[in-house]
Amino acid sequence: MSSPSFQSYTLWEGLARDEYERLYIEALNVLRGKVLNLGQPETAPDGIRIVSVNGMLCDDDLVFRLVWGKTTAQVLVDGEWTPLRGLIGCC
Image (cartoon, rainbow, N blue to C red; front, side):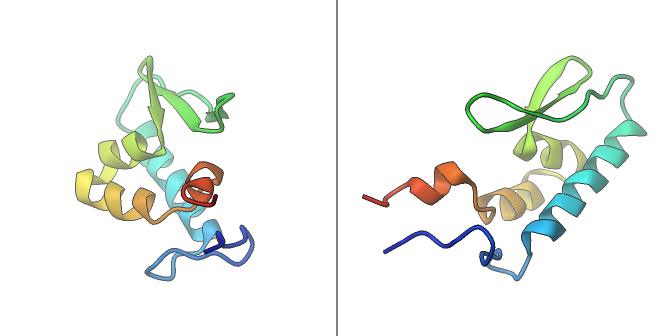
């Protein structure tokens, strides 16, 4: 079974990549109103996006958890395609 292409992949509930990014930006905007220090998101060498929230490095999952809780974060992140997840079980 081959992994889906990045351009054609959507989340299981129809959430497209651009919608996921919009929700990520929305979550960051919510955090800006709640925390004193929010850094700029960066992609780590391992390909995982991180952002500093009050000095704590947070990946997408933790950003979503801080804003909308564990259940919503799981729905958003578990369905999200990433290059790492796309390679699992490919060979």
